[in-house]
Image 1 (tube, helix red, strand yellow):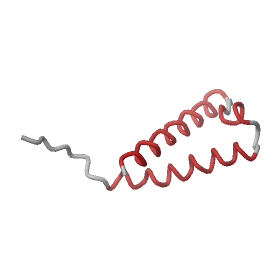
Image 2: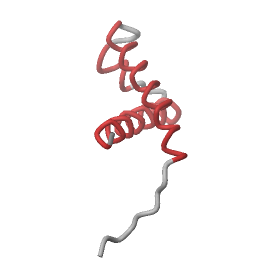
Image 3: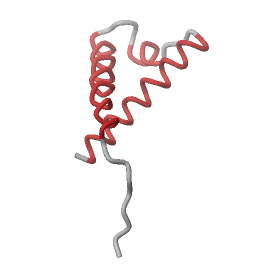
Image 4: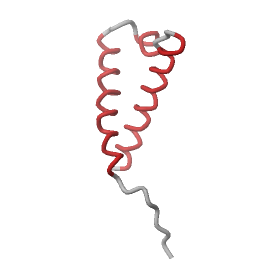
Length: 69
């Protein structure tokens, strides 16, 4: 599950950066790279959205680390 968690987190970060660019500079990085609402752009947006929904599960995870002696 750790690989899935890391992948989802990376996608959420990419989405957050893209939204920040849109909010501050009106620049959509994903649309610039892949075309404005092309099929691939829509797929990227959908995958980032799914990763965001999956990341909600991070709220319920135990964040406490335990030392092994």
